Length: 433
Image (cartoon, one colour):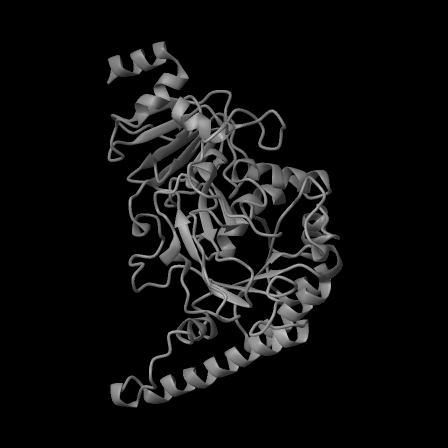
């Protein structure tokens, strides 16, 4: 081991990190010398992070943390290490959800349409994203069930999910939308009021169905006929499934909040272009908001008043706030820039870092595993060459559960960070913001 360390030191940092993947995660990995931003506490200068079996086993300063015997050591002096990023709203994986047959299709699962080996996931890894909420589109009042994915290496969708069994388990939330996207020709709604009425009726149907299930008290002969379109709504009513609600305008935000209050479900507001108008109302509701920042004009009319100061307005009001990419509205490779733009528009730096990590993890109810660097949590982290919000900073490595998934010193990985003709072979999701 001593000779091995000497060789790695001679080869330099990049060679060291390439070699690191040759070791199984049963062996402790020690990352030392970096400025660690754990999110769960103050930055740690000359920090040490110890990882084994995909989990964080220790974190602290060089003088506090004992280096395990036989550990593989990684010298990260001059680097910044922080948790893997959590993207609460993505469309990576080439998936498509509901079709044109009906405006409300809760039985549709985006998990059934995702390509688990899509190279679009490499875009997320190159941007430091380790957890994503993959959504169906927003062209429906209810376009289907989302799925929470970890950016592990795998060949099946089950290799990427947080849930144990994607064939039967509850693996994500529910996508809802209002505003212009779901307003089309019949059978879709033609007005905002009709949109709310149709969503309300489905929840009323689900309440009745739920009542029959409870009345049966587990007796098979008393159970109502199974309704796959209402089963996920029952999970929503029971607080097991979170509603992720696409909304932009001030009036649409208030409509979403009214529906949430009426039926008492857990909800995250997404996009919230006019959050700067609705921040106080959102704060009173206790509902969190996942927002997007844009660095160029354009898009649709209901998002014309989007402001990069939304993060600052929500923060001031006391709203739990996260950022998302909505990839391909904004590129996963540039996710950190979203928070940087929020800081530029008045958001607190520490809150902006939380909005890339732990805040999104809380919205997905995954904060017991991801979003911060703490003992016992998943070993998901990124290595940066400088301060996170500097224009000169880039993601150099992305680690997921103690395994390196992206290394910019590897030419095969670097091309997914820099792009170029025909780099991404698979389709990219496009839709109006």
